Image 1 (tube, rainbow, N blue to C red):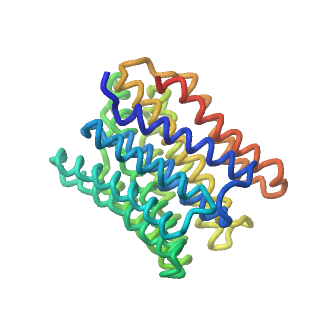
Image 2: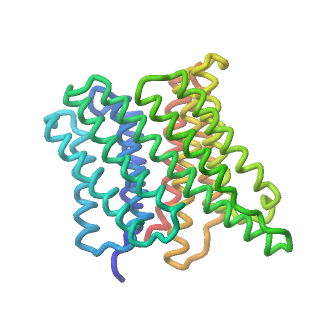
Length: 352
């Protein structure tokens, strides 16, 4: 059987997601700027590999292997403290340009709806964000590292908002109709408003404008929760994977609301702590459930219901420990790392 994108990139994403967080938490092996390295690898390593496995369905084996090799080389180069910065920058840019370019071309070749043109635009943010990050690493722009991280994170979250929102909306509406209820129509105005709020908020963060960013991202978080509330009639009719995706969307909304409230000093917690509800709970849950769902669909196998629910519970626990464990960080943060790693490892047996 021919090697497919998800069979190649999902294992790479899981390996990097597990090894990276455990090395960062317990072994102290990353480069000196731990926080920047951690954020970079979660965005341009883990998240980009999940995106590749999900989207690169039309590429030939040779190109898939080239992209995977570039991704692996970048992870090694970014993870070794002795790598010369210019060489590390080149290694990092290759997959961050190649994977989004191939994914965007796939969308442009297959899309027939104007609403889908948002995807190649969002995907194109990844190479721009990587370029800004590496400009900061090379001391070409002092604010480059932060700008690259915020734009990259914004691209991940906005893609999840659009893709995940559409998948969840269509699945829940279908489940309601099969149960004899009325169709739940898509509300594109909500999606567009959410896209604008998220994009504006993360651009504001990249521009170092935390006040407007807090307001816009709070609005984006509220729209996550509003879209979910409109789907509540189908909650009890939905399968486990859709419930897992709905939970991921809820974490995204709650985390962004908490981040905005903390940035506006309405909550007595650091904004970055609340952001982990979004990154671990939201991105972690959504990407893991999407991997399990994609594997089941493409391999025509049964959805692992127990595995999905357990993974979602572990991701949620990791998010809560990281966000609210500031009083006991020596206990809470390692526990969060272990919960994250265990959740990802639940997908390993589905990758054969």
